[in-house]
Image (cartoon, rainbow over all chains, first blue to last red; front, side, top):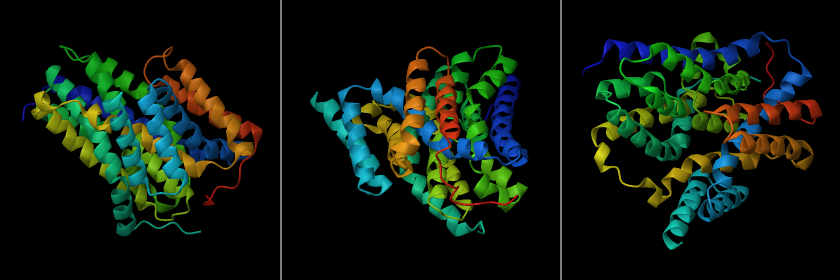
Length: 100
Length: 238
């Protein structure tokens, strides 16, 4: 188990920076005065974040990814459990990549 | 409304996140493989996964990694690429504010995109067991650590995971969790369009994960400005 001292320092630095970011959002929001605007911002954040995460990879993914995305959205809309939604999506993508 | 923190909740969160953790393992294998190529030892590879626990940031770190190790550049770059976590953990207030600082700040360590998504979706569904979040984080963390180590050890043996469509799982998670968040066009259409368009336009223009920060901000700020949103599902008096 060899760990270089500079590598260790870098890893600790990165870990500290990442944890500071994680903790600070929660820390700050507890100290901000409640307002309708802040509640609205926090309410809309998850959906906006999910959209921002999926839009570039789905749009640039090509037909197999588009079909996979449809399969996931379709099964999720039918309230099928998450696991099966993921399987349907990954299966569709794999199948179309094989066929195309 | 009381928020609890039980082992059963933790277990539930862990199990719910398992299939996603398996999908994310594909990226863990790639991370381990690249870490080996960059000259990191197995111990260093695992230590970074255990302590940093942020996929995109760790890949970026390996990109910058060289001898001598640029400690300050790595610290700053990783902090910046993870700035989105600041907004994300703020959303967890209804669950984490009532359980006390030890549980809250302990749980917050286990925040990555995928498990946060599962946790927030469950919180919005009305689950009042805050330990669910810690469970989602532990599931992702354990698989991330293990897959990184396997990638480091068996780097050469990893064969094209895209054949199995496994690389799509990371995207599929967010797509599937978006569906129950849809509250109708009046509330969501414009914010979601703003988020998607901003992210799409900035994806190639900005380095790192800035497109996520910008897209998330654009959507939620527009949503707040339009003012069309219901009450939070768990009301917390602080």
